[in-house]
Image (cartoon, rainbow over all chains, first blue to last red):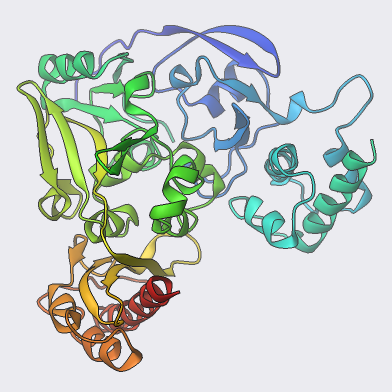
Length: 163
Length: 289
């Protein structure tokens, strides 16, 4: 098969409130762009085909699989990655709650789990157990930390509502 | 996993997209939510040389009322369809079926038009579109044409769309009378796809008998399909458990069933009858409730 030179295209990305100008091949996924071009390695690559949720980011307020989004199509979206949660006051309440409830074992799915819970709590400050389960249903945890993840989500909701 | 190389275009109007499709030829593919196409490209099962991204075309998004019914833009996401108050009231099947698609991330990015055009044999929207007798609005070089859902699904992963056409809108006609609808699905526990899914719409009169009904099955065969035998058996009969059970026995008549590592042909045939009965019972309850 003949190879051809694929030209890179300029893309402006809004990630965690910062503007990044990158030059990428159109086939570059948002996930690979984050990890390889921008050094934001908190977003994890596991299945790479939209089954596992390790690569979850928040795009315009909604969780999405960064492994199935192209960097070029992400221009104009407000992207939040796990690196964007902690502020000047320290960790995000959901991150605090995950630590407090020991809601991880190996930790590889954790950035995605945390972002799914953050996204849920931004829309629903007092979710039911069922709503929490559904919110993380796209984030696979093979260690089986779910009971503690659900507890961490409830704890985070309490921390956030008491502020 | 990295897709094969392609050139990328992001038109901002349907006309521009059609122009690109004509110019680039059949090697070009349209990108909607990308949740079917991009995995296929990563696995190198698809390698289009040109990708035309529909995400920047505002006219393809949103839900509006249309001639007593409703029209859903092809690029409206599953999640927008699922949570739409305009749809929830008169077409509750959109909420029910939408909430059963994949997982939250899939629903946030995947689109109803992308799902219909992809014509996955286990997709949920094809059954819903058939049961609601949806009208597919298709734009091409020679203007617009409308294809009824019953003629849209041609074969496995094949719709009636020509290579230079764009699915723009899914029109749902108004339903007269006392209407009930339901979607029942045996959901694959990992993928969320329908091992078998059945959409049912029933129309009843004051006496509780079935004036009209449409039943559509997905997941079971190579394409979503109407269960006309079931519909014939139920029309004019009371919407009670006895008539519905008898009618549901005809589900799968004339169908070719798929067998794979998840479910054999025999099992899918069995599930088709069971889920047809459940969907009709639920639809009858909502019509009479």
